[in-house]
Length: 268
Image 1 (cartoon, rainbow, N blue to C red):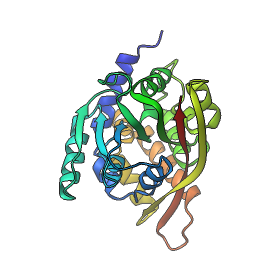
Image 2 (image 1 turned 135 degrees about the horizontal axis):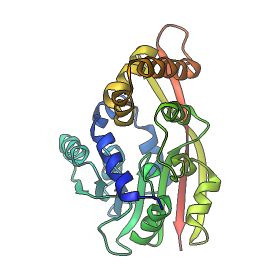
Image 3 (image 1 turned 30 degrees about the vertical axis):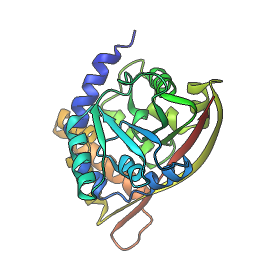
Image 4 (image 1 turned 180 degrees about the horizontal axis):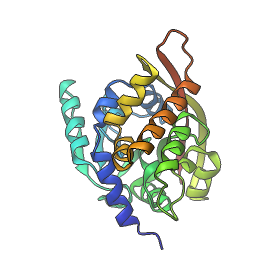
């Protein structure tokens, strides 16, 4: 039996050890804007952003005059989301909550969104059930998830060589496949539209990217912190290889694109 509560607490600590705001500040928010357009957000709609992180997608929805609630299981992330919203004079409600146990009654939202968030919850079926529960009938669910064969999928597998994921937990990259989405939501939806997209990453160099993720990306920081000196160097070298293999630049900088799946579900 998988102990999802224990796994979730471990994930919370790992994500909290980094600073997602540092990563988000250097990541062009194309994915958030594209998802909000694909989900056809309308002014005055009530929108929930699940596993919202520092609020990139929440703020994109708020810009469209939606009534937005952002939830995440790391309170520090939500504090940054509020701060960023205030800088743009936007209203954003935040609540600390786990995607596997959303603190809302049934049929509370017109639209539910998640960008690279819910995919990492350990109980994937519970998350899909919760998204369906809190969205209204004839509502929409919009999700983005990294593909298993893309840059972030390779990055995660590299970490997994040194720190294997908990036994019995399915790969988060199931959310990045059409088959996985159809399996999770089954026949409880009216339709689903998929688009495969690529998110750009641009850094001063490959070495900069490795060290930047090591410093600020919680799972990477946690992985490096738990390894001995030999494995530490091996993981660093493997990370360099991941970024080098994806690098499209030839001038010493890093330009890479990470494939992800965007899906917009219409509920019954």
